[in-house]
Length: 314
Image (cartoon, rainbow, N blue to C red):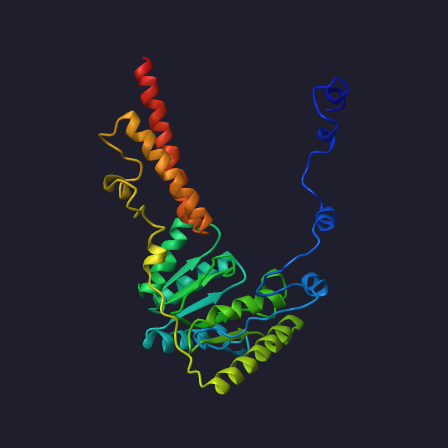
């Protein structure tokens, strides 16, 4: 680049054309607002004021958390799962590895429990389908490794079980445990079981924080006469990601992917423009899976347009 700059083909700024480093970014931002359900040490250290949002409109409080020994943890878990299944509630179980999640799923299936597993090798659309089926009651238990990355918001889940909770690491740290515990905070009967043989610093920190929040939430509910109510959330908001159920998409394409029989070149081009607008709108609304599917549809349509152009040229 230096040669290009010396001969006037590039501006001198091209020599240092890169994203800002974090310290450079901070030097250009006079004020910051950190937003997080579990702020880290850096955020807390640099915050002048911390405004907590602990009270939910539904009155639901953070779940009770119970520590249990790892001995016979699978049999104990199976017993707890059956209690929830009998009353039509769902269960999330988090394991340490993908192999463990698959083995546990096989064990529960052999025991007659309707179970599915979820990990990084399950593709996005299948993951959404699995979550939808859990909510609909097609099965009662979802086993996973990292239940934090799934964006799970499941009012039907009343029990979250963390196996080997005392094995400290990324998914067993204080912040991760607090977030995992929060998966049971959508149901009035929410409860969390941590299977561990020792009280690690991460577990202690998560228990203390959860209890602190519960105390404030319970006091607020008592003061204002609030009775907790389960969240009512339709399943259709997840189902829309699984098919192109938008009125702007021709009915013949919704179930058939990129099949657009009978459309000429001009109609295809208009359809691409319409889908692009819908894709950007979906992205702005944070419906990323739906936007991704629209993107794939647009790619298919563009390929068809190229094929039509080649045919016309020939």
